[in-house]
Image 1 (spheres, rainbow, N blue to C red):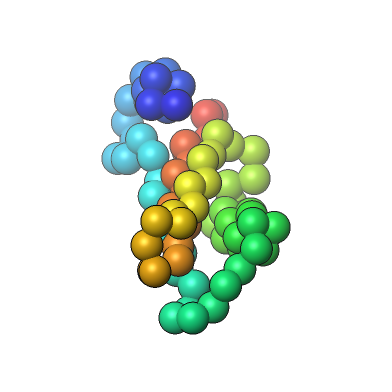
Image 2: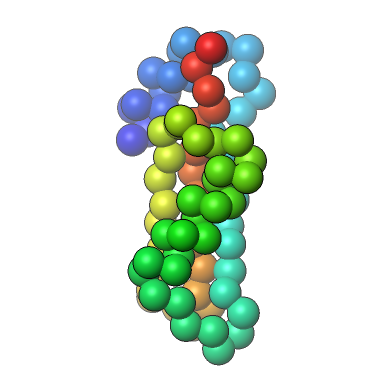
Length: 77
């Protein structure tokens, strides 16, 4: 993925950041299903205008602090 994001970066050398990153956390004690996390991620990315972009969603299950990371590549125009 890093290579693909790098290729997009070369197409847009004036970008300030090559990859958008955000982290979304569940409330303490809240347990969400994979489907719920995916829905949250898609709604969040869509709300920011990332509707036709490369993106990655990573969910952490190795800690008590349930959260996901989102990485998205800006539009190629």
